[in-house]
Image (cartoon, rainbow, N blue to C red; front, side, top):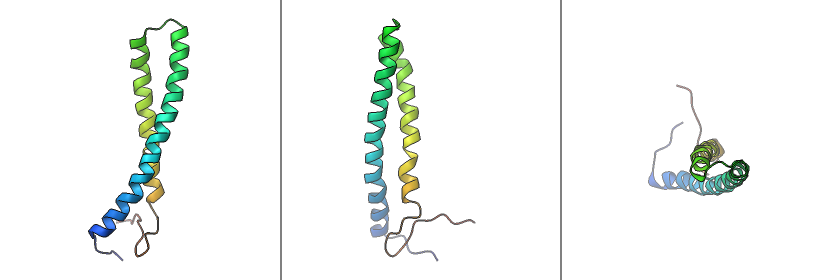
Length: 91
């Protein structure tokens, strides 16, 4: 059964998503930094210019960030929020 969409419920869902997303962003930055550092070191040792390394590493970081950004949504789907649960219902 559907429940009314109130600001209190919206805020609880938003908060559940926000803090998980902040952790995902930090994880993406760390993973991107590690991958970018390794890639930059390898390409730098091969004599590739800095601008080329940035053009290669930038999209790779973007892809990593996009892949990680799905996890906070997955984590809150099905979560029990006390008087309601966030679920998907087939039409």
